Length: 312
Image (cartoon, rainbow, N blue to C red; front, top):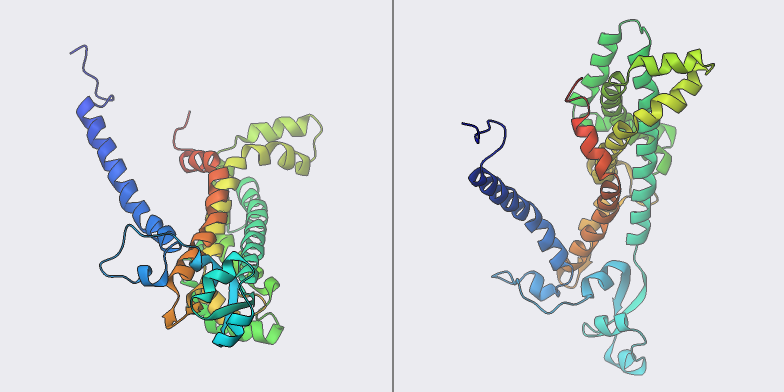
């Protein structure tokens, strides 16, 4: 009995758990790896059946993603030889590059709107969560439930009123309008998550700071915020993921100036139909900012998920 433990898993259990984790990781990553691989396929390989796992890689998808092309006559092509490597790629379709595509602009719009709304959601959510956590707010429970109830309703259910309101206020197809909209949607989530984190911070820390002569704002800024950094980082990741991937509002409320990447990527048309390598290339690049942001804050995310799970 001395060598038996009810908490320490046996060797067989560890092997089974390891196999399950590896299997789950492979199943989860397979679609992502397939999208990345499709970005380096030719159009014929991308739609081949059965699907090709082994293929000759090409940058044709990325060239089509970032350029605008037009078909030219054989005489024009003969008189104007290709000058760059991407010119050579499009020449096999009797086409020439005439300028950049709009993907770069749409990608920049996603960065501005996604990170801008995330900053506002976390900033306002932190202030509101601190007030709910530390002050005696009248009807606090009712207000918190009302805030949570706004998250229960699908945002697209209020799409038509928002569309009419944005048109009246001149916010349609603007960066400010989309930032405010995503902030309003994400704010309820930010308040609820951050209130839980701030509740776990002992009030004695602030009381000691106030005794030492700090103002309430100084105690909040120098004592509470550093302690809540884990929760703020976790909340920022969840807010950014929603704002970054949101599609319905972006389709309805934007068309040009403030259009983000999600509505633009499916519209990429190639020779004879949908340009799947270019779509896959756009999706791959679209994943990178959120992936990098999550990796940079991964330690805070893991701590945030388990914060408060074990109480002293």
